[in-house]
Amino acid sequence: MREPEGAPPAGPSDRGTHVAILKRLLVGRPLATTEQEHQRIPKTIGLAVFSSDAISSTAYATEEILFVVAVGGSSLALGLSKLVPIAAAVAVLLAIVITSYRRTIYAYPGGGGSYVVSRENLGTNASLVAGASILVDYVLTVAVSISAGVAAIVSLPAFESLRDHRVALGIGLIALITLINLRGVKESGRIFAVPTYLYIVTLGTLVVYGLARSYFGDIGTVEFDPEQFEGARQVGGTLGLFLILKGFSSGAVALTGIEAIADGVPAFRRPSSRNAATTLVWMALILGTLFFGTATLAHRLEPYPSHEQTVLAQLGELVFGHGPLFVLLQFATAVILVLAANTAYADFPRLSSIIASDGFLPRQFANRGDRLVFSNGVIFLAVAASLLIFAFGGITNALIPSTRWGCSRRSRCPNSAWSATSSGRRRADGASA
Image 1 (cartoon, rainbow, N blue to C red):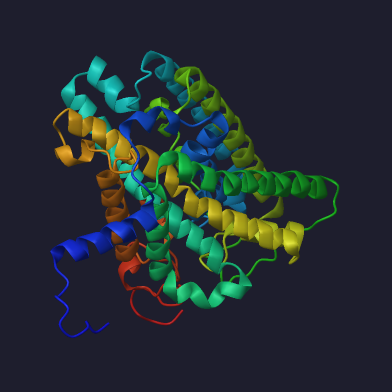
Image 2: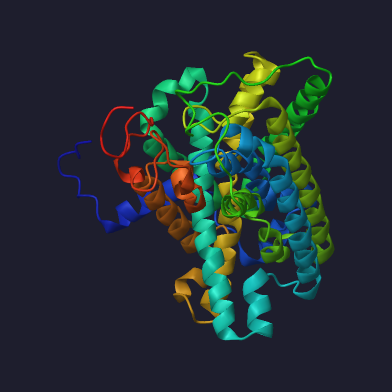
């Protein structure tokens, strides 16, 4: 807008005022340090904040197993036959890890998870390895969660035209969730609670209703489409122990993010240790039930790994048809996968602040922002995850290295993450599929 004649030009102070007003509108009013106690969250919100990542992995963990054991030299029939045993092994591992973290919560009520436990018991070097691993995992968590959410969105027929815009959609969603988290843990938790519980109820309905229809003979199997199948054969082939273990490794993505509650104990209302431990058990029961139930349903209904439509979408379409329940399932899945990144947003800044306080990260990571969150950690996480989304074309399968054994004529591995189109219709060598 043109300045009136004779009016002094806008100076640095005016621009600073405009930035402050914009920041107030987007982030909210600054909170006093004395209000930090009131920012603690109850168990119901804590489940949404710290468990959405782990619970959301039920949307793609079964698919990632199939991307290993049902493609390559194996076949869809062989992969499906090993799906339930692999899921059971992952569930046993989940129980072991949850038991360990529950003890950690009571022993280290100040949070910090594996980093603090390693520092106190194994020394600095071990703690740095643990801390670095977890921080990298959280960056990947955001990238994988967002890309999987975008995959669920474009699996809906109404949004198929967006398949060529996965990267833009992913980065836009990261920007949105970053802005929400800059407003504070308590406020973001309230926003994310409803979608989290909606997903739990919707997926639970799919599993129960689908298994009931399957066992009573009221439903068939997913219609096989060889053009969309990422493997080489529907039956036959061989499946060795190494690929089974690789499939187990891929299925273990269901354990992603379960440490977040142990890291974020101070965020819970007092008594924080007891509330955090209770929330951890809730999360384990929900996660284990939904994951194993989804794997069992997939074993009976025989979906196939595809970049065109997710396994969960295939199951939902067969069980619910094309009606409102299918649309609700896809919507809930897309939202929970996007919001699953909030677990990393809640924990990455907190853990990085602890490591920064110990002098192993820039001290700026230990500073709280206007809304009493570690805003520098939030922003760094957003930038790192956006770079991964851009580099790997927003493809979930490419972001999980263990699944790259599932290379086929239309998959994006290992080099196709850089050269394939986001719609999955071009091979790495540039030839049309």
